[in-house]
Image 1 (cartoon, rainbow, N blue to C red):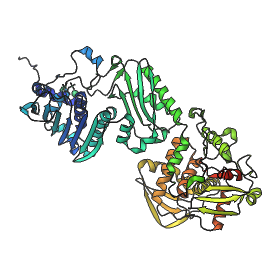
Image 2: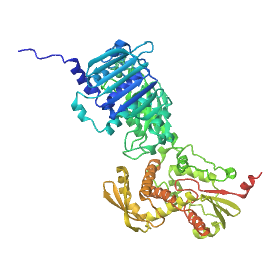
Image 3: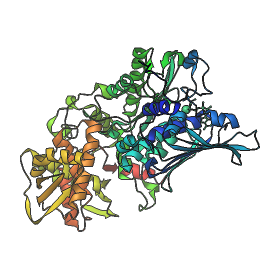
Image 4: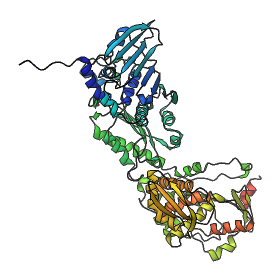
Length: 612
Ligand code: ADP
Ligand code: MG
């Protein structure tokens, strides 16, 4: 019998290797981008057509290749990056296995144009399924351009496994982010089907994150910094309220390489544990620089999974750094509310005579010392002072320092004796300023009341009572309105239906994330129910992150915020005086339910001081 073992032809071996390295268009994108980075480029363009099925092109202004190297680079195990196995533990490059280009060329039509700065002519190489079709000098710009066309042309099974263009392109974008995020000194562009999606100029890390993921992250990023003998940690974590159900904003880089490491991810997520609901994922962008000797990158062909020598040490280090950063950011929740409301002062009269409120922040506030479950927004009614949650203590100081309430108000337990106070508190002279403020005189003092914040407080109080024991009357609608929500919002709304019922909303599930609103409260006209419910759910979600608020308090706050914005301006005196009366009847009437000061009080002396 004849011997039956033979060596596979080179092109077949390459195709088999390609199966590991190039699983989809995004894998080719990753390899080409990494080669461009390794080539020292300062400008990299990624051009994609049809989610990479017809074209993936990467153009760089890096070192380029010689005539011979331009052909050599397609050989398997051809690399300029390592000489021997020991070099694997001195890596400063992305590539080292010398198989990416051989793999890509085995399953696609590749056109390479490259030129070194020192050469007068460049080189063109065309490689189709591991067969060199062309190798000739051409005129071309310094740097390298790889065009990969007709990916998987000779591997129909692979082609059939590809998902829709949308899915494949999202994988490409993801690979682009992973390279572009950490190489902030390199300018990148990405275009798809002729449309430029990203044009990233060289910048710092924070700017790069924002340029990629959008401005909404700008004020939500907090720096993480720590350095020890074995490594330097840097980057940003996002505020808990930014947490999502998906993991898609989690980026960990070690020595400038995007890596996946479950334990390190866990170190970060557990630091957030008390601050975000189960199942939500915090956003983070962290880079760690460690001695290359202590990391093994060569455990999978795609070089994303890594093995760390000191993983326990790094776990503790990372966890502590993230906790420290979270502790610092907890000092700023109040500023968020201002930000959210937009601080629009454009239509105010000359603000010269308005005294800026003083804000006292409690520097000892620590979210990790706060009790987990509490009714965050309802301190005045159900809790004694000693039970106040951390954030209320935090606001407490603010209140004590900045507002001098009329002495006749019974403030001892934060509630008012209505019979005693209404006739004394209700000012006799008042008017509204730009529909934003009530200006009133009381006891030779001047009161300024923020109408929107006051409205929120009044509604909040009434919603709490409605959910406790005085449900709002439902007004049935002649024609039900249909709501169509995202899956996550539909889940949340389903949970809130019984509570919304006591607020006067008759909402019915119809399946497929659709709901019918059969009835609504008659308090104010609400023309866009979809918008209202979405806004309420949005605010509800961020309150979970910020305060772990109890359901009823959270819903009351969220609904109050939305509904307050729908009210028409106060017109006549009887409306204004009814408003003032209702407001002063609320516990904590001087704060909006989200903790913002809504009454400012000026004594005669203070007023006099303006005129000195
Ligand atoms: P590796 O990156 O692991 O070395 P590749 O197959 O990706 O293997 O690339 C082979 C070689 O081709 C690289 O080592 C490098 O010398 C050269 N090369 C690839 N892409 C570029 C590029 N964009 N600019 C200059 N040289 C490149
Ligand atoms: Mg490479």
